[in-house]
Length: 367
Image (tube, rainbow, N blue to C red; front, side, top):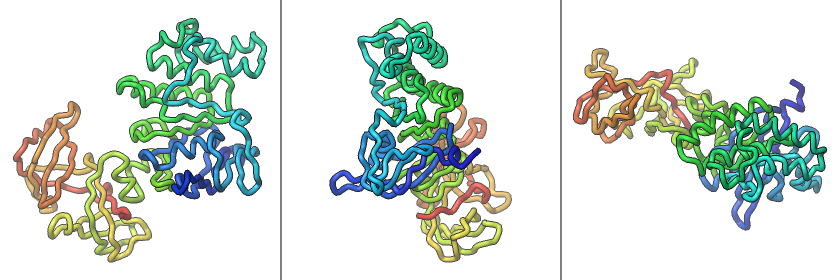
């Protein structure tokens, strides 16, 4: 892969103000051609502003955005390429399809604007409708479609012209849960097939984990972490990412000792009196540093006895059957653990148990 393909889209020191509010605070990132990147974060974190800046729907206050060898926006160089000349496909939360047109007419619209020959339009539209599974709906009006079918129509319209970039702004948030889960898989499949470089904006961590090649977690206009989904979930860099991605047990602590292997001991007695634990430390963490210990619920094991004396004694406050697992709340001292167990362990409210932490899955992160 050449350098241009590796850094196909480059966002460099992007800043965007709305009045006195700095919505995007000097962020930089690049993505490979054909990849799927998700901007993930809560409302107001700057993810949609970043997307709209790439699309040219917001003028930026500082920085540069370029795709390949084309500069889309640069404040310093006084360059601003209008949205209609950026060769970008967009899929919105609201579908934004024409209600008085058929599915085929909606999808053909971008090609008709470009004045392509009718035969080529027909060929492209038929091909993309087959790709998104709407061939049999081609002559239906948009108003006759379900929510999922309308979103597929919007996607087909966005990719029919084979744009340089495909931008998604929370496209599944209006769908019900079952359809949303189905469409996650479908969107990723289609993006893989067409190979269009894609940026996806969502506040839904599940969507990000399922669909992305990489995730950028944002907060207050800044990038907190950028990694593949597994790394973002299993090795969050700080407390914010730990609690935003999935569920985590978070305990304040202080590094007691450090080791070259990347493991050390952390005192968590502020959360559970007299307790310390072995965990993974980052290379920057030193003895005496204030940290937060992060443990995912599925990485806490439970036993009825404490044969090796390493267990943390606790009491089951709640055991909620979830089908394939039991969601437990277990109190130890003043701290309540979130633990996922298998139904066959048969834990019940009031049971006395012992919790065991695996140092390979117990992580010290920055507060």
